[in-house]
Length: 372
Image (tube, rainbow, N blue to C red):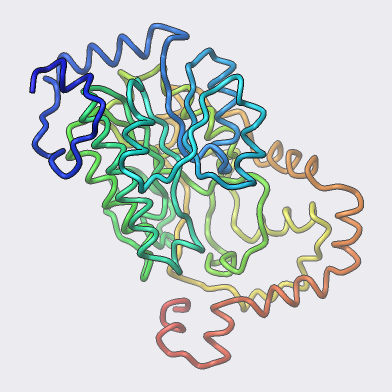
């Protein structure tokens, strides 16, 4: 196979991808830097465009003049959400586990912002699906980049890889990786990071802290100890980080960064819940604090998080601006109804707590998992 046939070939090589070698790194570096610095011609593929971060990233990419391709699952909800961009971006519907579809989407792309993935609680209950989507789906992208001969991958990883940090809550990239018990999501994230690093492609990895958009009330909330020190980042700021990072390729390439909102986005989990409940009209006093685990989750303060912000200047939100954002998404009627039925809503939620269920059923294994 000639170099031209390799770079321009239309058919993915399937299981023989490992036989294809990357272009020399010096050439690849110059090629990608050139493409990422030439303005509106830069072609960017965005996966997970309808997620919390992705739906903020699309307009940023379009408004900054990138040639945008979106790769997203074909669902009624996603189609309705993406219809507004039909004349502004190329929309491709497909599954990240479909190797050919991924190769087709990645063809001629200068950069890929990869946000698609299975997250908890689904990631906890469907480990096979989590592996197929989060690891194998990402490998499809990596293999497509290798096949194309160029492409810069920006990968969204997670703070979960650091494990339980309730007592040792100051976190930096160089810390020892230690997953929380049964956290398969974190395990697959780290496995995927390693695969990307070992592939030889150009990449950067952002380990995202707790990303906040409009929160859903979910039983998973009881897995995090109330005393956890938490540093949030708004979904808007996170989208800005990925988009701004496209123009800072040289400073980001080959590196892992912790992405958090900084000092103005720090509090305890208890205080975060109290503030969010108040905004939604829910009375925190009805929440059973004994229903919360006191170990075996994740989150903390990123003490090296400023490094990424110094490169790409993505932080605009604070805890207060985030709370104001939430207030703008709660109608007067919704808040009034939540206030009236607060006791019943929260009592029902308490019943869904898995740590609480473990205590009531005297499940020794789960009690050890959730409690000291």
